Image: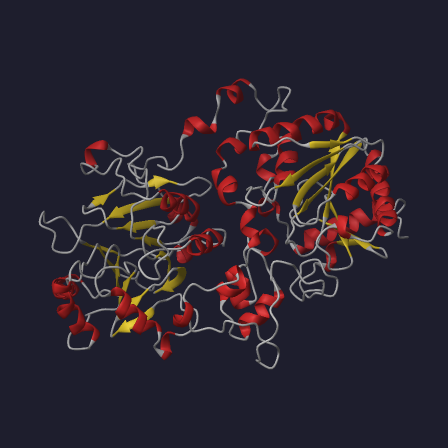
Length: 607
C-alpha cells in the first residue's frame, strides 16, 4: 500500500523565512521526510527590514528545504516579486498548481484546485477587500470559480484560506476557543459560505494570530467530517503553534467506512442553524397533512441559491472555456459558450471574454482582442448573446456528439421529444426545439402549431393514466438551447399545483402574474405577446390553461431548478428535486425510453 502523503501546515510567515526554514528542516529531519509545506496567512514581511532576508531566497542564496506553497500574497515587496514571477515564461497560462517564484517556492494565485501527492487541494489566495488590487485580494471571479468547483464530484481533502471563516466556533466547546476570536470582526463570511459548499476534510487558515484546532464537525449532505485548524504566525511572542503536521490518506483511495468515520467529539456544522431549518409552522404540518406547505422550509434556508444561484450563469464557465469539458454539464451554474472556448484556444484573455475587460492591463499575458481562425484580431462581439449556430458541445442539438440519442422518443419538423435524464417522475418528458434556439417563445410563430399538437398529445396520453400535465420553462436570456419540461402529476394532486407555486414564489419574495386562458394554445399566444427578450422569465402552464409567469430581474437570484423543486415538494419527493439523485444507467434509460415509445405510440403526433 502506498504510504499517505505527509504535509506540513504553517501560519503567517511574515517574511521570517530563515526561522521558518530552520524549523522545517529540523522537523523534516526528526519526523520526516515531508512532501510539502502549505502556508496560510501573510507570507511577505510587515516592513522593509525583512526584505533583505526574503530576497536571499528569491535570488537563490538561501533555499527552501521542501516544496513550499503559499496563498498570502500580500505584505512589503509582494507586488514587485510576484509581478516579476508572473512574467516568467514557465508561469504563463492557467497554472492551478502554482507559479514558481524561486527554487521550491510556489505562489497559488487567485483560486483553484489541484492534486498534491494524491490529495485534492483547493485554495483561495489573498484577503477580502473592496480595493480591487492586483495582489493580496481575492476577486468575485475567484469566489465564483470555487462555487463551481464545489459542484464537481469527489471529496476535497484540504481547503486553505488566509482568513478564518466567520462562525467557525459555533457549536464548539467554549473551553477550547481562544479568547477574543469567537465573534471576531476579522473573520470572513464569504469563507464560511465557501467551506459549507466545498465540505473539505481539512480547512486550514491563518491571520488570527492564534492556534486553534476545532473539534471535527459534520457537513450538510455529506457523510464525512471536516476539521478546522487556525495556525499562529511564525515566531509569535506567545509561542503558540505555528507549524503542524498531517498525514491524510487521499479520500479518493479510502473505503466508504473510512470516509464515514466520525470521532466521538464530532459536533454539528457551525455554518447551519438548525432552528432555521424547521420553522414552527412546518413542525405542525407533516407531508401527509394537506401538504401544500411541505418541503418549503428549503426556500427559507437556501442561502446558497438565493445569493449566487443562476445569476452566475451570466458568467462563462472557466472549466468549459479553458478545457472544453465541464463535468457539471447542464447543471453548471455558469455558461458554456463554444465561441468563447475557441477564442480561449487562440489565447484570448478569459476576463476579457467573461467581463468585457481585463483589470490586469499590460501585466496580462493573454490577448486583449478577439481572434479569427488565422490568429488575427477580429471584430468584437458580445459573448452575452448565444450564437444561433448549433454548438458541437450542446446537450440538445441532434447533430452534437453530446446528445443522448437513446432518450429521444419522437422527432417532428420543429420539435423533438425526449425523456429527461435523472427524471423527477416516470415519463418526465422534455420538448426540445430541433434548432439551436434559447427558448420556445423565440421560435417562429408557425412552430406553435406543432408544439400545441405535441402538448395536446401528451395531455391525452397522461389523462388516460389518471394524470394531469404541468409544462414549465426557465427562459434565461443567455441560455443556449431551450427545453420545455413536461411533468405528469396525479389528478388527485392537480388542484394544489397553483397554490404550491404561489407559496414557493412568496418564500422567494416575488409574486406570479397570471395569464388566464381556457387552453394552452391561447395562453401561449398571450404569453408570446408579453415576452420581453431582454429579460429572463420563468413560466408554468397549469392544467386547464392558466399560465403563471415571473420576469426575473437582472440582479435577482433565481433557482434554475425552481419548477422541478416546487413539483418535488407537491409530490413529497424532496429527495428527487436534484436530478443527480435520480440518475439511471444507460441500459435503464434505454428500457425506459422504449417502454414510453411503445405506450405513447397511439398518441404520437409524429407517427
